Structures are given as C-alpha cells and as structure tokens.
Length: 334
Ligand code: FAD
Image (cartoon, rainbow, N blue to C red; front, side):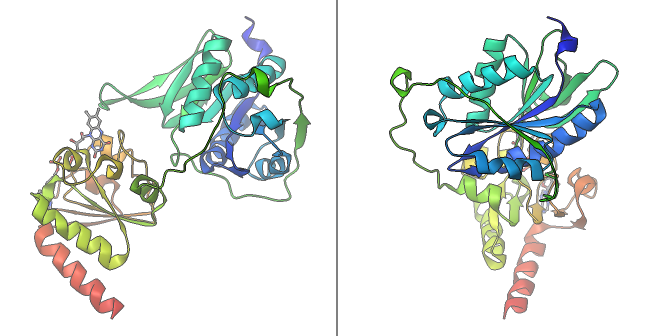
C-alpha cells in the first residue's frame, strides 16, 4: 500500500427520510479544519434514494465535493447495500481520512467498511487533529475507564477512519453561496439479492432523545443525598420547563433511569443552560456536558472540579439553594 496515493478528507453524510443528521453537519465543520490543514478538498458522501437535492446543503456546510449514490435499494440503511456503496467510492477515490457520526448506523457502517478495507478505526472519538508533517489523523477518546485521553493513530493503513460522538464538534454556519462539485456514481444493486429486508421503522420516542435535544437541563448528582431530596431537582426542572439529567452515581442509585445519564457512558448534551447541582465534575461526566452554553454549578465544596467548567458557580448547600431558586423562578413567572 502506497500511503501517498490517498488524498482528501471525507465525511459520511447520514440521512434519514431525506433529512441530514446533525452529526454529519458537525463533522463537516471538523473535517473542514482537517482538510485546510492538510491542504486537500473536503468531501461528503451521500447514499440513499432521491437524495441528490441534499448535496447542495452538504456544500453549504463546508464540503468542496459531494459524492452521491442514488439508488432505490439505498432507501433505508442496511449494512450490506451501504457498505457496497462506500467500498465503491473509497476504492475509486482513495480518501486518506473518513469520518462517521457515532450513531448506530454510522458505527455499524464504519466497522464493516474498516473490516473490508483492512484499515483501522477509532471509535467514539471526542477530539480530532492532524499531524501535518506525516499526515496522520490524531483521533482522541477517553480510555482506561475515562482516566486518560488516548490519541490513536493509524500509521500503516489507509483510509484512516474514526467515528465521532454527536454534539462534540461544531457545525459551520451554512453559506448558501458556497460553490462545490457534485459527483454522481452509479451502483449495481438488486433488491432480490439483498440478505435483509426493512419491514418497518419504529422511531425511538424515549426520554433519551428528549435529553439530547433539551435547551435547558437540570442535572442532579449524588450530593443531593437521597431519592427524596432528588425530587427538588424534578421540581426545579418543572418550574423552568427543563429536562432532568443525572450523573452515573445517581443512575446507579436508582434515582433516574439510564437514559437520563449524562456523560461518557450516557448522553452527550449541549443545552443553552446546564445546571449541575451536587455534581462533583468527574471527567467522565464533564465530557458529556462541557459544550453547554452556560453552566451553572451548585456545590458545597469550593474546590469541586465542576467549578472549572462552570460559567457561574454557587458555593453552598443545594438543599437550601434549590428551594430559593424555585421560589424566585415562580415569582418571575407570576
Ligand atoms: P460525587 O462524585 O459523589 O459528587 C457529589 C458532589 O456533591 C460533591 O462534589 C460534593 O461536594 C457535592 N455535595 C455534597 N452534598 C452537597 C450539598 N448538600 N449541596 C451541594 N453539593 C453537595 N459519571 C457520569 O456522571 N456519567 C458518566 O457517563 C460516567 N461514566 C463513567 C464511565 C467510567 C468507565 C467510569 C470509571 C466512571 C464513569 N462515571 C460517570 C462516574 C464518575 O467517575 C463519577 O463517579 C460520577 O460522575 C460522580 O457522580 P456525582 O458527581 O453525582 O457524585
């Protein structure tokens, strides 16, 4: 394998029902930076049925080139058909880097493609950079129980691939005036030869989805003491129309279901306002909420690490402060 034959940074543009997933737009923002550093074009690749009109949106979010495979068999995501499409594109155009959203479909596709292309894949990345001298992708993610960040390199194989957590990278502001190239590729796929059929798609409407989309989150930690005290978190959230989140310790104590856990092994959230109450600010928690716009921390320990990421901090007993906040917010609403 001659590594110098591979050039360009690519992003898998995941779409469902003709709507591009936010994580793909975020990855175009991250990919743009990598492509500029390496002085190569940024490509997006788009697979589906009747999805060509989405190509212009991909360009507006930062791509120089969009590779499109439009075919009825690609209407719904399936490993087999999507992998055929990606293999065709990757073998023909030979990008040096491919990024995928760490969504169920993105993870499934990336691992299948990595196996067939016999290359490396870093899963669940939270930071990306490139070493311009040797053109190596530096894909970082928490490792060893979240105690360290590991930067993983793929030195001998191409393309270098990573899946990236949703809501970690920032999308660019779309620019409808941006110019780019749309490259359409044909693929020979036959529905009768597919080993799987999509019979029905059932959308997930759990609280998990709600937490990821929430504009305001009140997150409670073990500092609340017990389940009864934790009701104050629900009360505050209800007063201000926020969603409730919790730390892993809270979930393990059975005060909240797992889908409301924020952090490395829970949800990554980016609300406008994030209250962290009785939360110590362990790294595994912080990776899931540090990109919130305003972080308001309440903790009785002035040295709690949560204050390092907080926009505003209140040092004091949550049991005294939460009732006062509820009272004041209720007055404001009245
Ligand atoms: P504690 O660390 O016990 O902190 C309680 C805080 O409350 C303290 O800072 C204390 O000063 C304060 N406090 C106490 N009483 C009061 C009071 N009356 N008023 C105000 N403040 C008070 N954690 C997550 O949250 N999400 C994850 O996804 C996650 N994944 C993990 C994955 C791995 C592999 C590992 C090893 C750990 C993970 N953790 C995760 C656990 C994480 O390391 C911490 O243990 C956890 O976040 C701590 O939860 P906490 O802040 O609620 O509790």
